[in-house]
Image (cartoon, rainbow, N blue to C red; front, side, top):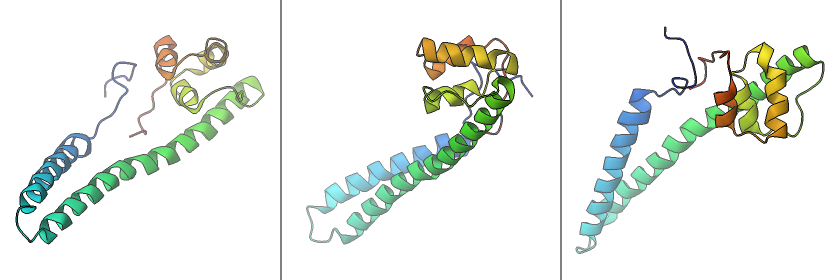
Length: 143
């Protein structure tokens, strides 16, 4: 397995991110076209139902991804707080944003305390934090 780093740490599931999103997009466009054409005749019940189903699919597609990510974020916050506590003897500073904490999970133990201080002082974005990491700590569990 290839070593994880800033350039390759993003993870895509081909069936979900590409195939399913493409099919939902094409189906929604088709349902909109079908509904538009049905407006010229008296029966648009089936076209409206099809359009509603594809709108439901879009909403499901979004939340099926967001709910587990929020749960993973909470686990990362707890894990990183414990890791920082074990290294620094205190909890993560309240000034850190969630996105910064999530980015800090890639920092090695040797870099963590320094990067936390820099992130607060320089108001680093998650992208800047990841780019500052010298020794990458892999996280292969996040989807």
